[in-house]
Length: 459
Ligand SMILES: *Cc1c(COP(=O)(O)O)cnc(C)c1O
Image: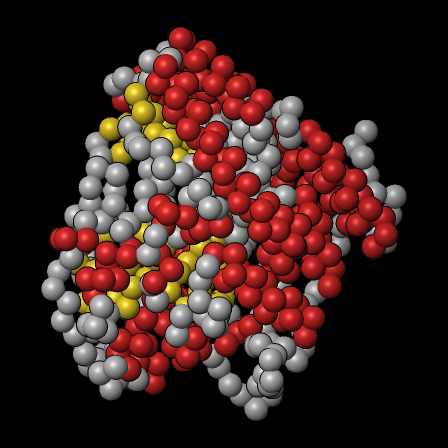
């Protein structure tokens, strides 16, 4: 018999959800990381015709749990090393539930003073933690794709304002051209964001990169006219960080805007050990990062920071007689985001930062980086080839020719002890180990290494 809420009251439904969520979370460390093929096949149970009328909510939730939970990828498992995304920390899952129960619309201060206040404080803490300008503006958005978009829209405003063009009012048709410079290893979502804001995916100037994927500052084009340079802190394959300080030096006095895509890498600024790797990042004009990556906050949670807050607000704010402006130290969240109505995702960020504290974030980063180095060391000793300099939490491993590497990854994913994805790095097929899960322990690394050696032996 499936567990079932006793009735459709809020008490019964919310109690049931909490109980089943806990059962799921308790099961995650011991079950296989990837869902079994049978669990995925069973998803067909969701797919019946739209009910003609209401169905009991208790039954609906029971179905959701019975069919959905086994088919979820165990992202909260300490042996999940996929895509550079961790799992949510328990305190932030709990705050997420509470926030949903509050049902606040984090658009404006007036309808949601409590969550607007929490977001204002979380922003101040973030800038402090990362060593970014205290006066920077910030946006709580869905992810780094949109965080990059916000920052690039602010950049577009600022570089055109300098030549007397109001892009929000008059658009890009007939505007002075903007040169957009990106490293050849820019994340594909940066190009997507550039496409969305009318700057074009293809018309970018690509700067060659080195063997780790770092933009070569010496190869920057001569800057002339309105220009945006997009750099990266944390390559999704190697973890490498662009020489942002050199880029800032090279563009100084030209009016160019320097942006940093730091979707996961920006969090390394919180660690004394890692900070030197990111030297100069703090001198940029704008930054994007993800709380749902290394901070292990629930989806969806991206962050944009912009030194010139007026540029961000010019790009994003709206006004209408029925929408009250913020006054004093109040902050209208929607002045800096593409959305008006949205969930109060900044609450989870506030909770993540308060529960971890400065030392907790630093420890999370340092622990994950140490685990990445251990993977590299022990896999090299076992005869695998580590393709990158392990500077942060990313390890790229090849097990001989592409077919063998893919066979090892396939076997590992099927075995279910741990989960790693694949990539092609500068022509080499490789396994990606992204260590960015707060749950990962030394034992998880030991177990995963044993599974990897076994998969190597069998391939
Ligand atoms: C993950 C990532 C992105 C995209 O972030 P989303 O949160 O998935 O939108 C952009 N840039 C880099 C470097 C990333 O690692």
